[in-house]
Length: 88
Image 1 (spheres, rainbow, N blue to C red):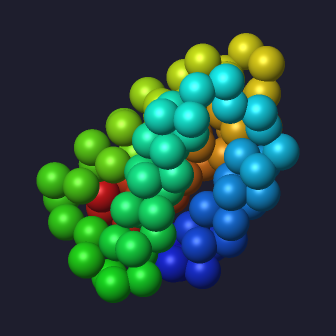
Image 2: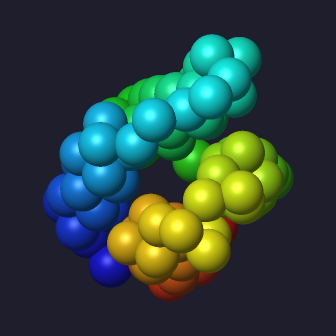
């Protein structure tokens, strides 16, 4: 699986997140930090086998949106699948 596909999916996720209203700024900051960490790992090609916690943390920070924002949930699942296919 290519880095380009993962990068494109991360960009799609960011676009979807930009449409959402977060009631809690700390919650939004947590989501942003996790997304930036994933993007940095991808850019630096520094993913390691222990880095699956990043996607777990991103999933956790977005869990409350699952019911009302299925596109966000779909993109998170796709990112998780892409990382798994890359061996992470």
